Structures are given as C-alpha cells and as structure tokens.
Image (cartoon, rainbow, N blue to C red; front, side, top):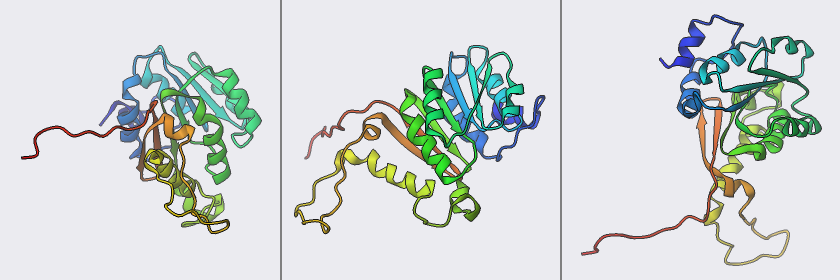
Length: 228
C-alpha cells in the first residue's frame, strides 16, 4: 500500500471519491515530485478532499490548483490550495488558466468526463504542461457510456481520439506511400507534430491515460558487437 492509498483509506479530511486502482497509477508516475516545488492542477474539485490529499502527498512546497464550474467550490481554498472557477469546455477560460498558472507540472482531468470536455481540455492545456510533466485523464470508461457521449468505437470519444496519439508518438517512423493517389483516393500521410516532438510515452490503464512529456529528437538506430 502506498502513501496515497493509505491516506485515502484513513482519510482525515474532506470527501474523496476515487477508484481503488488509481492510487498505484498516481504513485507510479508522480512520486518523483514529492517534496519538490510542483504545480499540480486537478480539474473537478467535488468536495475538495483530493486537493487535500495532493497537498499532503506532495508536501509543503507544492502548489495545488483546483478547477471547477461550481462557485461553491471556492470555499475549499486553503494554504497551498487555490480554486479557479470556470467551465473546462470553455476554451477561453482554459486559456486564462494558462495565463494564471506559469507552468503545470501535473495536470489531472477528473472533471465532467464528457467527450467534448476531455478533448478540449487536452487540446488547450497539454501544450502548457511542463516539458518533463504529466497529463493524466481519468474515468475514461465514460467513452463507452451513452449518457456522456460515448459508445464502443464511436467516433469522437476520448478513447478513439487518444488512439490517434499512438500514431503521433510513432510519427518519426512514418514513410510516405510509395504511390501517390489523386484525391480523394490518396492515402493519408502521417507527419511529425508538436506532440511527436514533446511526448515520451503514453500509458493506458483501466479508465486512465497518462501521458509523459519529454523533448524528443529523431530516434537513432545503431549496431554493436560482432556478427561472427
């Protein structure tokens, strides 16, 4: 049992609502920031308990930001915890968040869980995550739930959207089709993007996607040792 799970099971603070297997994922990726001056943003404040959990986990140098659409969440502000009120589906609001927070080391999307909310949040805030930071989107099972705009292999869900990121991660190895067809029969072409150049890895778990950033250059290949 890691410290996050221990805190959750012995929660001394406000209400926290999390799937049990998330705590191992959090600790696996976030533990290196403990005791550091880290900026953590969590979308979806709910009752404020998880913000207190992050404050306890990361320590006194951490600055925790909670984002929620409900103005009542403002009451959960406390030392080290700042609350921003706005709609995560509103691109203008998210752009104002980037002005307010110089750098985001860890971004956790635990907000409204609709497809549009998750996609807009990723598109607006992922570029603002630090070059060595993390983007985590949780409760991805809503991509399969109709009431959230989901459905198995339905175009436009966050799960289907994120599958395309796998191609972008591997775009360094794309080769142009040997034969160029005239539109509309031309094969799609995979090219490098800012995502390709800034992303180290994607980690898919049950209901969670963790994207780890790290500046990348074109991968190199070499051989060592004797052939005989």
